[in-house]
Image (cartoon, rainbow, N blue to C red; front, side, top):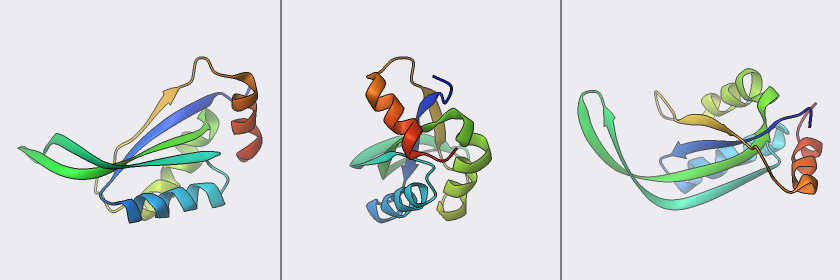
Length: 108
C-alpha cells in the first residue's frame, strides 16, 4: 500500500477542543476518521513538576505522508497547549478495505 496508514494520538484539554481539531482535520481531508475518547486522567512531567489533569484523547486515522507537512501544522494552529502530544503510530496490518478507505478519504 503506497499511502502508509497511521494512527495519530493527540491529547487535548476538553471535548470541545477535540471536536474542533477533529472537524479541522476532516474538513482539510487530513483524516478519514477521528475518534474522540472523553474523560481520561493524565499524569505527566511538566516544567519540573508532576501534573495530573483530565484530558480527552483523539485517535486520528490518516496517512504517513500527510503527518509532518500538513497534519501537525493543522493541529498546532488550533491546539491550546504549548507542547501538544501529537504522535503517529504505523499501522502494520489491517482490513485491506478499511486501509483503502483511509487512503481514499484523505488528500493526495
